[in-house]
Amino acid sequence: MLAAACVAALACGCSQVASTALNSEGVRLYQAGAYQQAAEKFQSAIANDPKSATSYYNLAASLHKSGKLTGQQADLLQAERLYNQCLEHDGNHTECYRGLAVLLVETGRTDAAFRLLEGWAARSPGIAEPRVELARLLEEQNNPQLASARLVEALAIDPNNSRALAALGRLREVEGDRAQALDNYRRSLAINRYQPQVSARVAALQAAGAGAPPAPILASTPDARTANQWQPAVRY
Image: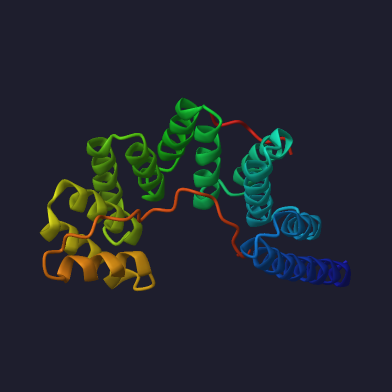
């Protein structure tokens, strides 16, 4: 029995390695604009590791992208189902929540997008990311004051959240408070220096006049990513 268990564990490990490799190849294809080919890799990744939330997310992102480009409603419906399946396997998958919220807004269900993210925030009071995603959605819906309040809540939970600091810096910059914006951007970069858009804003604000218009900091579209690791419940 012990030998059988070891063999099973080894097989499981091999499946996860294969799934990770397939996700990596799928991401490469996705970034090259080959969304259907990428989707095939992600489908194989799921077949190798049916519990990989990232594989479901990657396949959803690919179908979401191709559905928008081709106008195929079936792809968008499948993407929505896959986003929900991703969340069944990882209830705090930030990219998945973002992708699903974007899809809901794009298909005329902004209220459902808010319910989705507010439900996440209620279920996960100890993490900042739901508030950051709510702030992104609120800013896109032209409600910067409430977006700022959500970012303040996020930073109360996690003072070192680089995304919240960068997003708050952007809002401060839009408001004309360049000194506070620069401070927020610098703090964000001190935590995560691999943020070229934030670095660009710091450079612009430090330049004479600092008059360059602010650019978006938070990504608002889904994107495939490399893996880290059935009927879904609808959260909206």
